[in-house]
Image 1 (cartoon, one colour):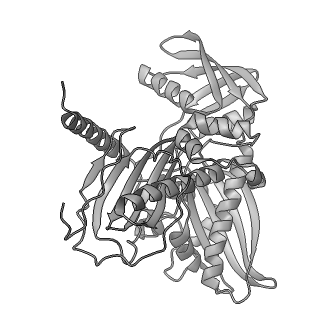
Image 2 (image 1 turned 180 degrees about the horizontal axis):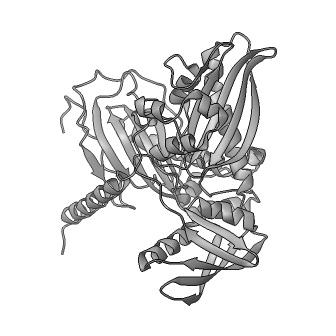
Image 3 (image 1 turned 180 degrees about the vertical axis):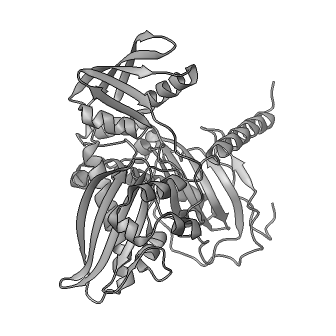
Length: 449
């Protein structure tokens, strides 16, 4: 019989190898794609309770509640917010697939950390469909933001004095269906495109900038402060794969006594929200409409076919793929899909698949991937909170917090954390097999084990 402790060690080693492999794969692209739509990252928790264990359990539950609301907001439209389901602890436990903790800090009474909560896709879809809520889950390709700022006597892009660039760099949001990338603004970016070319929409230079960040789409956002009415006027022009897609105009009104920097920071959020809502409207799942088309897939080798099949399987609109015929040079497939053909073309383009029509014949081609990306300004880790507790356990994978019979626990009043100890060991990590108990909290410094 295998000792329970030995079995747990084997599980931990296996999870560690899986985490290492995942890290190596993730490191191949410096700019993260929003492919994992049902994972919510960077959820901060900070709970004080009677003990470290109580604080940790309460924090994990609160973090899951925050995360599910973030996920609902990501997938649904604002007008349906009142219809979103309010989950009990037991219902929440059933839709959570797993939790990972980063920058975990524990004292005798306080718990801090940043959670990644992964949800079960089918469970979330079922909740939303049962509630009659429309939703989208097709992730857009990354969108490289080109923030141009205009004054009465200057047009700025990469200038250090450009407050619009500073606002995007500091306040760009993450976690939606449309991932935004803010360029570094270094010498390479300066050489790729200047303010005048951005305003004029010089395609070749916009494409060069996008390719540097492993992307194909750019958003030229031109901001101008206005006095009548007070606020900021923004022109947003979206270019995708060398073509102008759409232009929107937005005015963000200034609040009483609001500083220009604060206004621009708020405007960044409004621009992102507008783009997110437009994207969701275009990609709402239409379960009431299902159609089918037959397409020819030109092939150079077997690897290309495998890539096309994988990308089709990853598209949420594709219900099934029927292979009509197959040869060394081409495949003919029947695509059964949700929605209309326009939605299908848009969704497939996000997977680097180009669906075109010539008369009555459809062709599906794998497009060339974009080059390797470079780190962006968004890659800087967030600063640690002041007064952090003493122990930092690094990165941890834990099972979802099981529901309790007494319902949600109220947050205890904040207490002052104990004095900080020397800097944490960033290499420390812990993992727990799914379904097992979370590891016990480390013993506070100075206490007896």
